Length: 469
RNA sequence: GCCCCGUUCGUCCAGCGGCCUAGGACGCUGGCCUUUCACGCCAGUAACACGGGUUCAAAUCCCGUACGGGGUACCA
Image (cartoon, rainbow, N blue to C red; front, side, top):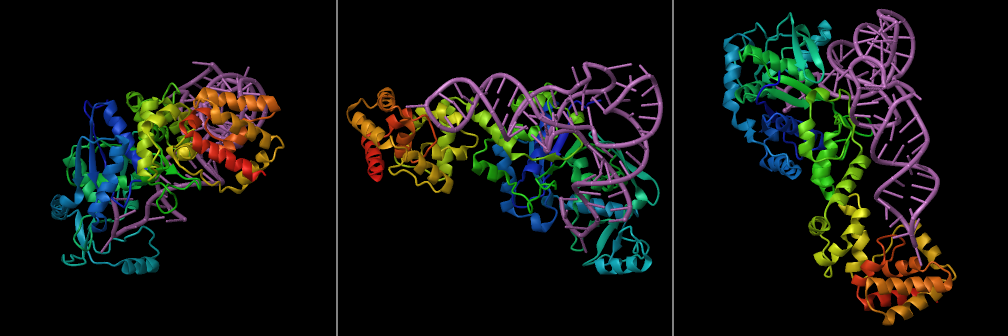
């Protein structure tokens, strides 16, 4: 049943940036190709001149590369293949399966208003023998009887009655072909065996199949329509309503391995229920037949959790490399920041991180001269409260004293601070932490503190102590 | 309106007629660990939309209803 070497395509329309829904479509094509050692083709559907902007192309290819979804062929640009589509349209006209039309939207609406026709275009120009020219569209003559059956790998057989399909436009008034023709022509030309895409395109499929058959292309490819990704409002993920640019996730510090792992889990699940695993492993398990039919809610919390798992699984060295790059990309490069120092802290950072954006507040106090100002009102209150415990001044005095002369390493610092606490029967770590880091919570204190200059640590402690009077 | 698709815990996924007193993951709650916060571990929470069939047996098959989504462009 399964062809030896399937050929699939990801065919986005360029529109500014790649969003997660498109990325998921690309991924499922990629997985399918990998699973059956097929060919994954990238095709840019820029038949509409408004979309054919060079700057949009990179917005597609760049994120795909970031995700590691490498394509085997392409990118092909439909804007460069117009002659093929025009030839196909002419073929249809010759076969009397398409005709010229000069109706405007207003004309059509007016007629339908009068006649009460509800089927869209009424076929008014079918026999009017309009001459081609500027502003004249070409419409495909849909059959009045019969039905198109879409055999969908995910949904089963779906029937569309031909008489419910209007004579749709296949060439615009400006002479450019619409995507339906381009789709049929290219899928045939590129020997596409499986068309895997979002469910929003299911309704256009019978039109493409009709064109396919009219063009004499033989057996159409196997279709598979993926459930849509929806947002909190339960609506299809869209650029207008949701923040879904892949690049935004990257900026937040989602890593591609996690992103792709999470995306693979939307609408599909491995039979053994093991969710977090390398994409190659997922590919080897992937079956289109097992893809869900219902829309999937894009859950950022779970994405973050998975990202955290990936970050924790990294070696400290790899983690540091990622972190350093991320810091650089986001423009945070304090003088004292070094990969070496970061490597020491990496394991404890990894434990406390879900997205790379969580990282900076964990270590900024170590690498910056001045401790960051806390801006959160609630935190400020909690900090004030913690510092107003009666033993705090004594604790700080003791710690300052001890830290002046001890060895400046993790163990000695710990010893000074815990002894101060023990002798006063008080929690000594919290006030010291607040004094030195500016925060109530964070990394285990002693290791990063040893990286900080003794003089800096002391001056922060003295400063905090003086504010308590 | 019309056409198409769908409906298992709050969310994602497992379940393809008996293994289901429905399983896993995220989230949430509680506990253990811990002189911060986490991680880790343990426990708990919570679902087959409804109504009819079919069958010895239905979350699983069929029909209807309700609800949700998508499409209905000279966008893709």
